[in-house]
Length: 618
Image (cartoon, rainbow, N blue to C red; front, side, top):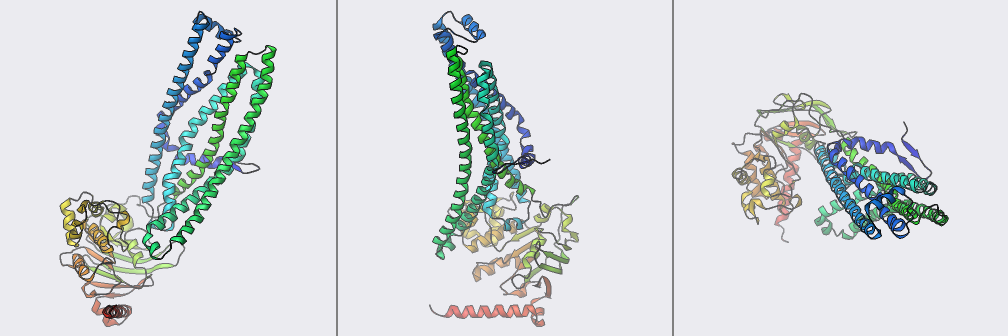
């Protein structure tokens, strides 16, 4: 069935709205009790608003003129009071009572809607965050962080409008309109027919404009996501921006993006304003027709002044629910656009997941083998081609090669950030695709070249992979990597909260905390990607002893770019163009005079050149 309805100026896509409901409706079901309570409170508001004009009618028709058109109401007032003064007191009391009922019911409705809405949003956000953590790191490398943050926060809030507020408000507004129209027909069918004649104009305006609002909102959210991404990049790299005098350039980039977002926001507001303007004009036309016909009816005696006052009160009161309905159509259009953006993230399937029947990897010895492994990123060129490698338990292996040779990809396959297209990666003769991701990564300690720290305390950063570790264990492992001294010199020692990305520390200090974090897990397999970056020669030598000493029993893979003291490794693996081109000890590879020998010679020349440059006085 085609759920897309075209209009002259756009389209209203019910299919997309239904798809959003299908995706997020399951989050609403646990809160049906609160929503039904809110709906019951909304009925109280409806009743109060429908009854509200009638006390004034009683004053005009019963107390002031004694021309009550409603016989049942006249008999009720005669039974209730003995004279005008007592009737007036009852009318005043009724006005106050109606206001109290309206206020209490509105309060209960708003509180219940807020509770349900916030809980639904919190659950969606929590599930989305969990889902994002199951995705491959390549997803986050391709997508701007600002866009992801916008979908995780602002877009989910807009979905709430559709799932909670729109439903109750639409029901309340619709029922108020129906109740008031029924009362208007009771008072004067002819005037009621005239009032209804203006409703199709408002509905047509809402129908024609909603599709345009949805598209404009989608464009606005995209522009805002781009702004968030740009601001995240620039603010996160402020030292670079200032060092290269890019303040004006970045300001101009931000201004361009901001102007686009402003234009998109103004277009959305203009469309909404057009919708409300048409409804206001239609309402004004209706009031004019009712006034003309109603006053003539009062003059002719077929209608009392109180009836006309109640009728006009309903007509004016109907403007608000009609406006709300028109506004809700725009909100639903916005929420649909935002819901689609959130649903897009939920729709991304993890590239790597546990197989059915996956087992836990336990009692790992550290035997690693890559058997004819081939891998490429999506449609790109092959990164690894028929690569085979066997690493024995407790070996210390250096992985070297030119930039882009495939060294880091090899590590990512071992951590199962990606799965091989051909071949297999095995630990202790078990294909890592047959074990659970959690148990696999529990056996591996990893230090990334780009050290990543969180805005938590130093102790929490070290305990990241081992949250149950005691303070004594944390201090012991920090001492092993020669981090204990500088940590204790921080303002609050191990309790010092680091800034974002740990930028309050030097590069070498961050690297040592990351190394302590990996070693605290006491993993049987340790992976180090250029682990001594940012360390001076003396500290580097001391830190290297933590994984080079005889007491270190983990199978250790070290990606090296600085080829110094390589004879300490059990073997050296040389990777070139996605293949293992050489493997052996330092002496064996130097004697072979191949790829490694040329890399080592180039590295020694660089060291000599740097050393000679250091001797030149400034």
